[in-house]
Length: 231
Image 1 (cartoon, rainbow, N blue to C red):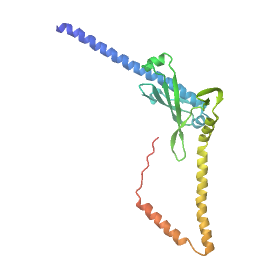
Image 2 (image 1 turned 90 degrees about the horizontal axis):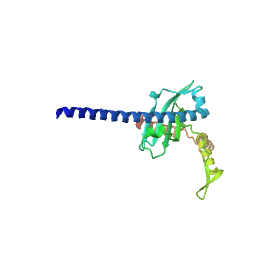
Image 3 (image 1 turned 180 degrees about the horizontal axis):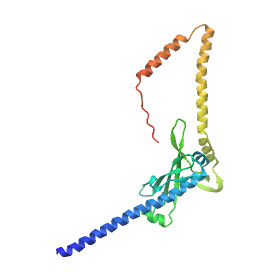
Image 4 (image 1 turned 120 degrees about the vertical axis):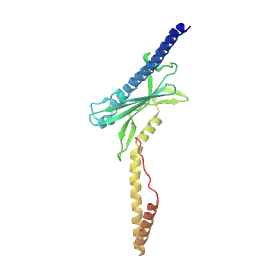
């Protein structure tokens, strides 16, 4: 009995080892093929973005695969890939997130059979004023078709959507100009108060000094907060 059990145990162990090897190999193959597909899309978008090209310099190329990362959600139907992009001036990280069609549970089989990944968003880390680094979209603008009564009008674009997109891109400049104008308005208020005081013969110096001392004392009493920057 023991002589017959040993070959069965060896066969079962070999089968289990083979199954684990096939499972791990399919998992690795699915990750690698997904990485190459999304990386190629990210390189395409990076080459079309003039601001990114000016930031990192030409020529540029992607970094080694072992410095990249990949993650899956929704049972492997949504993938996100982050890889380094090195240019003649700087190096940055490019992140591409895409979704695939349902139906095939295996990512490796889906990719090997020519499955398409639709890019949801693509971004690159860009320097900001004050030493900050934030992601910036590098996806090209896409025309939004016009819809009337729930039907797409062929050959026509949604003008309202295009105007909103332009307004969103120019919001940064308008915010900065608004802050500068509001700053000038606050500096004008003390000047007007000083002129009114001079006309009435009164002085604002003691009150200003008292309010400044009170503000300094209140600032000393408040606890200091530490700021942590996450990149």
